[in-house]
Length: 263
Image 1 (tube, one colour):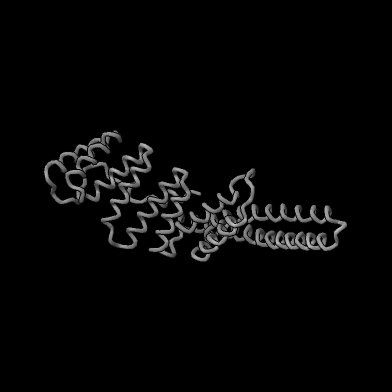
Image 2 (spheres, rainbow, N blue to C red):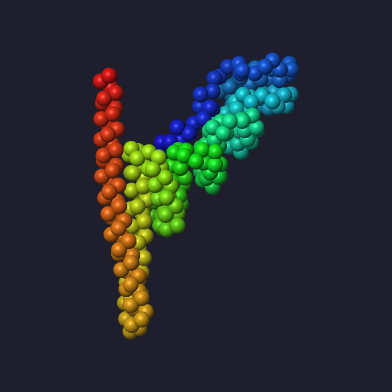
């Protein structure tokens, strides 16, 4: 998925000059803040973070400095320190939309660092503030898709996680039925779910054979095999429908792009 770019909050567009929206601060705070921005402009991340730390020790009420300090730590791969700075930045946010944006930023940091549990936590915090946040819902679907084994041919299917992923994708589709990528990603999960049902069917059929002399056990196993077969067929039907919707959404998007290009 390429939504992490969309989840990029204010850090992605930081100016590399001194903060302009801050009121005049006591000299130590200003001196170190200016030094930090100079280091930041030169991509001297360690020195920038250290200078911003000194500035914030002198005056911790500088939201832009917390933001830039987080950015410097992020560039060094210091996720924990970046998160610490962003949580301090959260104290300055009063509007729900601002807080939700920052929660998405925190989640994206953890996704980049492979910490899906923590990312899930922050995406859910964003959804508490903006229940119809398509990006957070989409990423939660992806998290459960990965946990369910859908992103790996070798991974064993995990039914509960696959089901959760499908539920999140359905929420995204309800908000944006024209998203081709969502249909594609849901189809990947559906394919893994079909693999799970086939495995369960094979197990049940084997049990029926092994218990051929026990009529009751054999009948119960055959009944389970039939149930899994029915689910496979239903999933295949849904899979084909998703393929059609993906194709239609892709064509519509291309037509829209072509129309915009001719204007």
